[in-house]
Length: 180
Image (cartoon, rainbow, N blue to C red):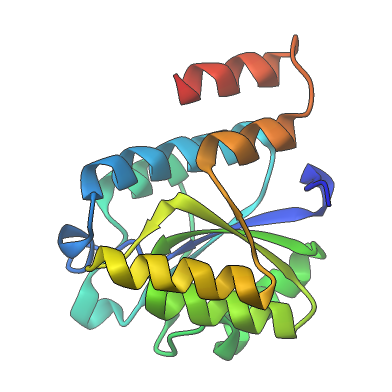
């Protein structure tokens, strides 16, 4: 199945101040998150952002907030984004089938959201180098489970070029600069 920009929305899950410092490979994760968000914006993909229990976990980290620009996050208490009516209403309002997922933690909120998106008829595309957990083994186990459940697993560079489709355009040049 080809992933087309016309049928795709992005989702950034819970990349928050008090949780992020505990993630594995956080420096690379932060760089990849800012790159994919910038790339999705260049391509014209709308992006939804969630924050889990803001009072306890804080706001979206500054670098991600900066690349997102002016955005409204959807606060949640449920681990799965799909258990929050405001999220589901926002997702449905875009009328897209594919959901590109990045964020934390892979084995909790990302996993549960991906499984629930599948149950709701959406196709989750989990960007493996844009998700993390406190323990690498938890991330690896969650990636395997999501793949078994039917989620597509991809990488930041791969999905950006798939959505771009052709070279020789201004979009291609912008994406090429981002991934180098």
